[in-house]
Length: 399
Image (tube, rainbow, N blue to C red; front, top):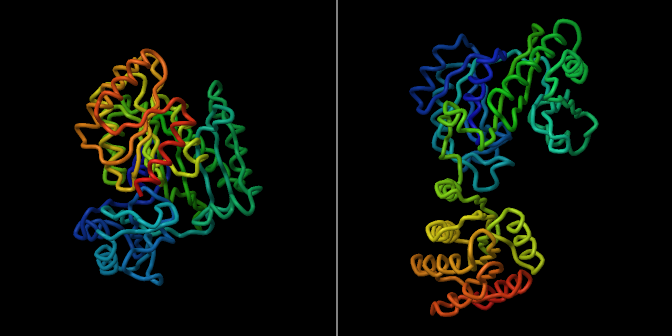
């Protein structure tokens, strides 16, 4: 689960991170009221969406020459003008894709005297299974270009959770940022603050970009992103309450209600599979046969008729889907039960696209007979390779 910048900053401030004063705003009136509580004379009006690249983003309908999703202004009147222009519009960045995201919230923040920008993040290093700091002197909007063109400017500092954050980690962070003296000590201290916040909130990612050094030599968290391990949210009801469902895919939200693991993709063949590894293999073999999967959907080991019906509805909610491949290995769940669920679901949703089903495992013959006797145009497959070929052929035939 991700949260907005202003929410992440509030959490980090509770742990002692240095942030500028600011106020969230859902309306133009709230934006004006927030700005009036800031000292000025410089204000920053920031679009709040779950995507990076806001500063270089462009609003639909304003033209390529319009200012981006983060704007520096010098009057309350300018805050009002920009809030009116930004709220309710769709902001397109390199991370949102061409469809963009609608801006429903703003963050009105006090301006900062920026002398230098840095990059500092904490995440889980999958290679070591440990938290790691990713550090660079090249912070700002173009960190992706730095990673691509000059990766040597990005350093990784791993922290063993058995010993935790130690003074040498702080010195390493300061050295990587090329900071010394009092500012270097502040960088080391900030590293400890971020590490503690990362662990305390069960975060999966905490990114500060940019971390800035002011003209007075202070460090300031100018932007912050936080994402959390969804499996840990039961321990953090206060963080879960920060969830903004308008930023998430509606189908993924619906899938969560039925304990289905669903991720929308860009293809046209819907997939319903039990088991994450089998789901990945199913998507791969669809691509191998020249088509593209429309989703990842894992119904889990205990698929019920209700779950299967919900899965069909979620898959078919994507208008791009022109065919469905069901690939089930009946281990814990018997194939005849799965088949009954597929038939019931297909009838309930009034299935109108080709459906290929591959069943294997316990009571597979009973399952196949149920499908054959259903009276529905369900195509059975003998194995995964056969299933992929058949669904691709059926979709082409129906086109």
